[in-house]
Image (cartoon, rainbow, N blue to C red; front, top):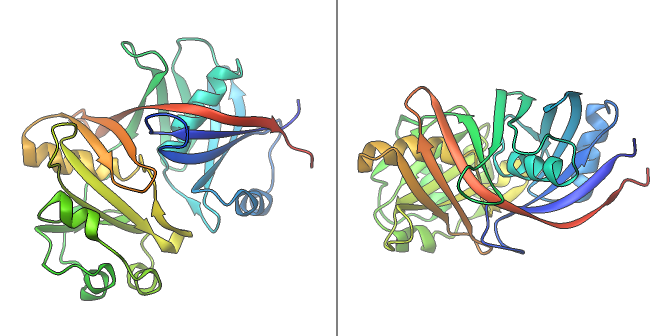
Length: 272
């Protein structure tokens, strides 16, 4: 079996929106250093590496251009999309992924052609004052309404969607201020009826100044806004230049379900 490569836009409204991922299906294991070098070559937010373990069950790892990450939503969505398009997964059946965050599941959404639902762990941000260096690097003029932290990121809730849009980080300062964490999520309630809340995500430590559409951050945003708004199902917009869209359902058992669409932009085979 030849190693294949697909370029996919995930959690968007169509081509050239949402977040880009390279999805590489490998016939046999590759060394970690090889995967890291390949991801640096792709230079996308995430490169996903898949290896079939048994029918509808795959090993999955995610690499940014600079590090391996423990959890990634958009590249998991892209992986489910590619496996289905290439006929490597059973039509209409759940796909199981064995990852550094345990078993994750993707299943076709029952009422929306082409969408998938991802069963992910909650990543609740525990309230904690954000370091002054992070607030200064983000250029926030007012203290956040909430600041907290999970195992990966800081979560800051600000007063309005306009304030989220206006954040203009000093990325070199933010990189130093956030180490060893992955990044910072800035969020607010949406000012539009098209979404319940909005966010942006900055992760210069991971080689991504601003991520376009981030599934894993919504594992923290979902529980946060479910508590704020008193509803388990929420619609979300990510206010990056490319834009991102998804729905989040908080299950109440330590799990969240992320729902979105993906589209293949290009596909091929590895020449090495």
